[in-house]
Amino acid sequence: MDQTQIAEQTAEFVDLMTRAQTLAQRSAANAVAKATGQEFSVLDAGTIAQAYARSGMQLARDPYALAKFQMDLMVESTQAWLKAWSTDGEDSKDRRFRDERWTSDPLSRGLRDVHLAVERAAEQLIQTLPNGDKDSLRVRFYTRQLMSALAPSNYLALNPAARERFLETEGRSLLSGFRNLVEDLERGDGRLDINMTDRAAFEVGRDLATTPGEVVYQNELMQLIHYRPLTKTQYKRPLLFVPPWINKYYIFDMKPENSMVRYMLEQGHSVFLISWVNPSKEHAAMSFEDYMRLGPLTALDKMEEQTGEQEFDILGFCIGGILVTATLAYMAAKEDKRVKTATTFATMIDFTDVGEIGVFIDRDRLKVLRDHMAEKGYLENHHLQDMFSMIRENDLIWSFHVMNYLMGRKPPAFDLLYWNGDSTRLPAAMLLWYLEKIYIENGLRKPGHLTMDGVPIDVGKIDIPFYVLATKDDHIAPWPSIYPTTRLLGGDTTFVLGGSGHIAGVMNPPAKRPKYGFWTGSDYPEDPREWIAGAEKHEGSWWPHWAKWIASHSPGRKVPAHDPDNGKLTPIEPAPGSYVRAA
Image 1 (cartoon, rainbow, N blue to C red):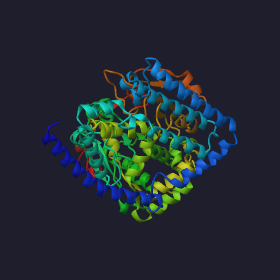
Image 2: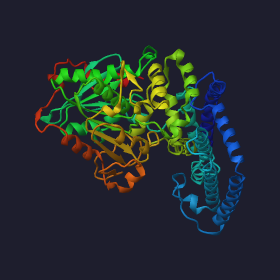
Image 3: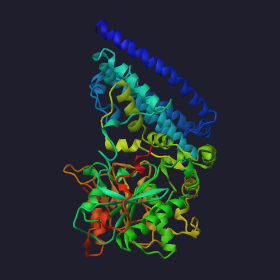
């Protein structure tokens, strides 16, 4: 490195340090506010401390388990260290250590294998805690967070790939990583907003959400998009997409090759879609019932007005699927039979076991959340982002820590992660009711427990054909918790299990190189483990299976395609509309 490069890097370092000092003050203030309860955080130190204290007392009653933990830890760690220096070693299946230098270098291999031994021993100890206990769930979760944070791959001095890059670039990689860190802190105004994709590579309406259509109706909560047909004739019943309102709608309309909207248009469906508003303080009083009235129910009315059709198909994803299910139960109670088939993706209606999401939600946290939203009227989008990232911490936090900060690289363009970062706020009234009545009280599965617009609802009264998709590696809506839907609905239910997780498993279009595959079964025993044991595995995308299912329940006669320019509603603006672009 010559003198000019040294001078340039020194000047850059000084500039970054100046910016970092300002950010450090903001970060410290935020940390103090969260620790003292002045600012809401998905992490609550008091709750975590209580969970460890009570679980510690539980473990103290089992000295054998503690002794076994200590013995296993000592034996496995010693063996791992000695083996690293005396044998060639084996590659690890753990993605954190997939670089071959973790195997070829004895020191790195020893550090890796000792850490994995510590993780195994800690997991075995925690498994002795009672199952189904909230404290045990929290101890398991936060112990895993600690173990993940302590992995040697996360530290420059211990990560052989990061060390080698530091030497190869003469320190430039570390400076670039420092710049990435400062930029992420600046974007979050002192909060670490980890960059997971090349944000400049995508623009809604240019690269994503490009399927042609028109916004044909809007109200204070949503815009209704009617897409232009891609076939001369279409199935008689229009299809309504109800997306989640935690993120933007274009998860259904990504790039043309993985757009579900485009795929269903190509199959001959007339497609309508709800684009939700990004709520502000003025939406604070919007309730879950408002989402039903101003969302699917209004959309169905406008679809009938636009096309003249009186029967429809509907689908919902995640919380959008919960809204669809509640809406259908309301319609069943009102004897409204306009919807003839329904589909839900990654949607629980039985919240007996919510998985690791339960770490963050109970009545005490609900009170804190209520106080936090009292002034603002909404929950900021980054809280849910942080929560979902922690559920898959190695994939969504630490892998980017290594790439962005230790290696000094920029993440590549990835449309799903761009969408994942384009999240929305949540109005106070809707969120508080949803968490209390549906999450905590598990009211959706209880006949008559919930009232929608003054009408008691019962999902068992939904007697239309229902397609339920879960995904095998979903950490947000675990598939065994979605499976009970097969026994709760009153009609003919088809359950399909896709591969991969909450997003990638759903957005798995037909492709030349099949990805995850899916499982189907002809009967639905009570135990999901029994179902998967007898299920049939299929290669490729589940989308054609779903399209075939809808077609089998559709009237045989097709009709001339419904074009938004020829409907009764006057187009307001071209798709994707303005609501989806609002920050």
